[in-house]
Image (cartoon, rainbow, N blue to C red; front, top):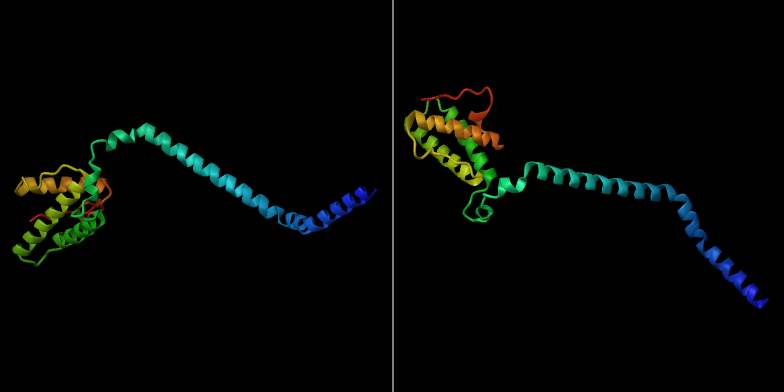
Length: 169
């Protein structure tokens, strides 16, 4: 009988000791359930995004697009950041297009700097260009082509905007 009383007393102590935990579980059950459901939803969303990206990679064959690009060029210390080149191109492009009243020497310098930045941007993105090899109208046509290709690659340039007329000298 002593063992029965000791067992009953032990169970009573365990019940009293776990009573605060039971109350906390009862009052916080909705938050615990909410956290579990939110965590599960986030896991499903991340899984769905990964599967979608994997399907897109297989559909586009992303490896074949980047196979010929030498990624070591992007790590070179002498390479200017693409953001800086884009800012330079926008600034020089604006000066080139709004050069009324300036001297021809100033305009030629701005145009040379603009072409240099176009060549650097093309080299950074792996786009072929022939600006240095051409002169006159051929160079103007190549400049417009390069601006269009850079615009298609995501660089918004003043002369490449839709509806924007380019002034020729």
